Length: 377
Ligand SMILES: *Cc1c(COP(=O)(O)O)cnc(C)c1O
Figure 1 (cartoon, protein in one colour):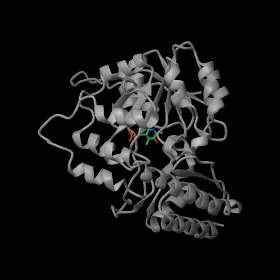
Figure 2 (cartoon, helix red, strand yellow):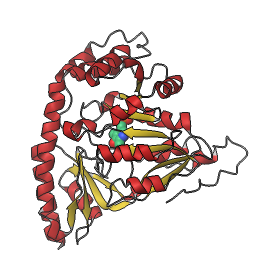
Figure 3 (cartoon, helix red, strand yellow):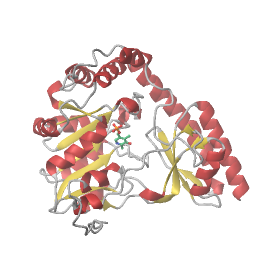
Figure 4 (cartoon, protein in one colour):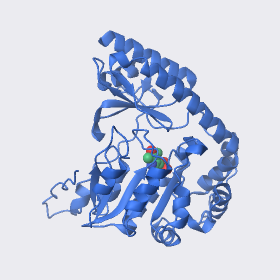
């Protein structure tokens, strides 16, 4: 368990002095799209949809409306459409500038200095920043072979715990826990602790594997579920996320979110994307097929120490335990024209996260890793 202290504040009195907890933040590192020399690379580092977005969404973006006017502050049409699709009351949905905004707001509403925000080791990198920027202390529970360990999370709860984050599936590991485990986690938490279930990749999970988060959010007072248009909907550039949960929790987030947090084009584009569930299904099927093929290709490199971790998402984390290191693989893949995600900053210097791209891209990556592993042996 770690609860690292913030860096010491600047002593200078001739300039504004940041809060101690802000000084302790390391900025989020986004997936890169160019090599060190600036040359563009094929980007499999940010879990974007390799199929792009729905043509209906692209079309809607061009006819979004009058840019001189403020957008609907409540994104009403979009919330109503989301409610219909997921069988949720629209008034219990709040939109965010990406689900990122909502993750931050959830902590801001319920935690502050002296409080703890809990999640599992290798949890999504934003949780640390979300906790620190409110002055709360991030607390990391041990993982179980890179996955979520419900017992370890429950054991790490203290009287100071206010928010627990569960990314399901988790980024960067791809790990997933089922309905019983999610229910057990929730049942083991005090009712005054907010459980935030981050479902950024939920649409990639088969329906029969549903983790029950929406049902939990519908009946419990302390559950918030977040979703995004950035991943399967292919709208990362539009910054659209949403959350559902208890009416009081949604009310709190509405009070502190940006009043016009979804732009005109974001609302129009997401609404059209939502109506194209064929695109979503096609993306899910493409991802499942390519991920299965890619995992098999990496498993075949087991004798070289490569191990793909089980993933329910649109990426695979590969552990490197042989002569070919994750860093060498990362640099080697760049020579082949691909940028992936090496994560030493998240305590994973032994692993590479690779987004599932097109069939051709995954063939090229698997072939390159086979060559690199052979050359390193
Ligand atoms: C990508 C991602 C998000 C959300 O991103 P937004 O673009 O802000 O919606 C949230 N959680 C996890 C785990 C992610 O990987």
